[in-house]
Length: 466
Ligand SMILES: C[S@@+](CC[C@H](N)C(=O)[O-])C[C@H]1O[C@@H](n2cnc3c(N)ncnc32)[C@H](O)[C@@H]1O
Image (cartoon, rainbow, N blue to C red):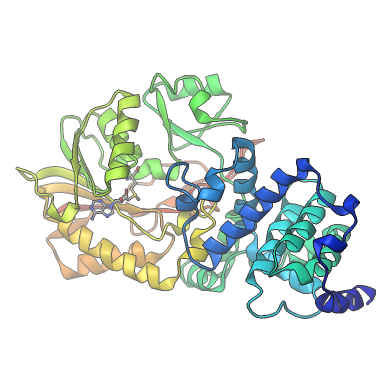
């Protein structure tokens, strides 16, 4: 009750930095901390309010200037705060709402983001809580839009620190994903599985790699876990993957276990002419080349094609590179197979890209599904009779997967589905549907010992041209 009174007063209170004692002012050491928090709040606003993708904002070359200006350590902290805030946003908002007597004034979005950035650290990150509160209060003081709420920030966040355990218990029942996404998950997978998928997306993913050869030897060398799918799951480590053994020598590449399956569904492709129609950054192109195919990699984006080329160069692999729109791509002769790993809503990758759920909505799913259907109809025309088409993407939505393929088959393009055979992967028994399609979710693949479980949500279907 006392707290409530304080909050009420704090709404009315106005203070200016000049009225505060010098002891309350931040030291030089805190300046970097303040810059990190201010940048995190600004970037959270860009994602949530302006629907800008986090990958674009955090791009080391083309990204947000305030972020690029930070040193490596501060960038890492900013990124960790943002990922945590976005992963847990509905629960953070519920926690704050339970401590505020009345909702923040309309239009107080900058204040909302200051609160969310601080609460993400207090509830979910290993950062000293008193420092988080002090920095948030100072941050509020420094922004004319938030200055009059500085006391409220102080009161609410101190209470959050004191009551952290009870608050965490209280918000555990709050759905961790936005309503639109939970509704779609529940409609597709049923309420229980939808809840499990939503919870699974809260766990940051482990790093999986695909090796050119000798997976068992590499698994032992890294102390990693050999996954039933053939990928190696690395143990937790600090630092960059580029510093690990075999990276410079091009022995392996980073690729989620689920993402490594679609290319393999083309079967024995030694000597076959295969086009990878949406190729960059090239994880699946590399798999097709290593499997012995003559590969044509088609990619529309100039920047992403440059990245694909860099990746193949590092791996010492060669493909014919075609930079351009796949709708303009016509091979000289019909192909033996195509892989269409189409651009999608990416809702299967929310463990690493939690911003997706805040930057995209049901209308994007529908738009992307329509584009994918158009791409798939074109892809079909590129293969010879008897040739295979693998259609895949990392969406969890049937509109971009099961439904899309069923609609295409109903149109009759002279196509038949080739059922994917159950592979007998322990822990992944449900990854092949009764229709013979590959479907994973982040809730699949249990953890083992200290090795994290989970995998990206992926869909893949194999079609044959009659
Ligand atoms: C899901 S990503 C592909 C990932 C890739 N297959 C891999 O495993 O590394 C989709 C790619 O399709 C590309 N793309 C989108 N529209 C395209 C089009 N009309 N023609 C060719 N590429 C396109 C995007 O630029 C993006 O790189």
